[in-house]
Structures are given as C-alpha cells and as structure tokens.
Amino acid sequence: MANIKSAKKRILVNRTKAERNKAIKSSVKTAVKKVRVAIEAKDKQAAQAALLAATATIDKATSKGVYHKNTASRKVSRLAKAVNEIA
Image: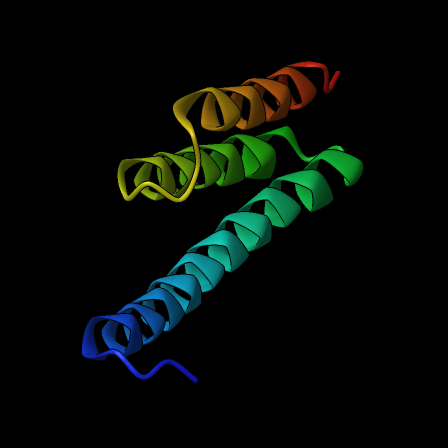
C-alpha cells in the first residue's frame, strides 16, 4: 500500500474510474448482444431498433472516454453491416 497521500488518492480515483468504465463497457456489450440476437432471429425491425439503441450507447461510451473513436466507429459499422445483410 502507498504511504504518500497523493498516491493513496490516485489508487482510490483509479478504482472508481475502473468501476465506471467496467459498467459502461458492460452496457455496450449488452446492447451489442441484443442486436446480434435480433439478427440471428432474422427480425429486421427489432434489429434496427436495437442497432439504434446500441449506437447511442457506444457513442455515449466514446464521449466519456471509455472507447477510442475509431473503435466505436468500427463497432457501429460492423453492427450496421450485419443488420443491412438481413434479407
């Protein structure tokens, strides 16, 4: 354990940020999973609705600094492509 006050604070702050990032990443994974489930069920309406929600969740995570903008763009792009390929 750290002895210096600023180092102790850094440990606490880092723990708080890690928990927040973990929660945000978890919500993104859940949103992406909903899109994937709708795609596998070949339900285009549900997939598009889930895609809209997932895109918003990913963009929110990006604005908070959890994901890099290119990573977020790639995730959204792959999901949109998968939804558009539903016949």
